[in-house]
View: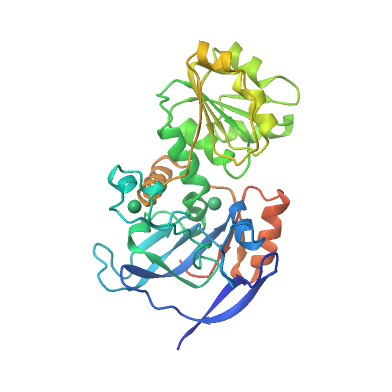
Length: 340
Ligand SMILES: [Zn+2]
Ligand SMILES: [Zn+2]
């Protein structure tokens, strides 16, 4: 059997180690992908640190996968060998449960497949994915540029395009990190009056370069007051994980405004009266499924949205993970496998 290199975790909280494995065969309904790049996402810590219940080790993390189909399993229609594809967090759905029949594939009641958690992901030279979890990758998009769009990108893009905001509306992106630096670009390219909110003045030049029309330093001023002065935000997209930072911005919502939560945070406090008097709402957003990712990739090529990445070869996966966890990466860490 031919062998491949992977970066795997052998036990909860264990190190990411390079191992040699047999190249897997795709089961029916699946394709094998020769991986070209895989983003390193904060959610990979669920696998690395054993925070997701029921993970079987050793496990290969990684749910921001871009590569090329190199073998088809039985019964796969609509995909061919040599095609460039991406795989994200959402690893497939059944198509026949009530949630799927309503189009809510992300909430499939019978399939709970998560790339890099319930089965091996993209920190590897090859991986296997269900055909219904695949996104087409435009030729113009280099693999390392596309990888972070498979999670951080699709999450912000899909939240914004489903937010109800239309061109010209005031939309604020809270946090300029891995998600936020993409969120600001998407919001600007969608034609929103885009406000970036972050701590400190040092991120303002970058925020403006990414397309922000206005910048709020949440250390120097109150984001709710500043947004209100501009008429209030139709949408605030919260990419931070700090519940207090979220609570501090909710007051900046316009009448009919929506506060979208993308970052996992603790309890958020908000006066009920403020919500009901302005018909305001707070809701969560779940990222997206394969067609959402495909749309995010296509929109990024069309509009020039790009993730800012630090690239590491697969062999340095442990270093890339530490860099991501340190919060110092500008802005996404990406593993590259030396192929297109
Ligand atoms: Zn992710
Ligand atoms: Zn289903």
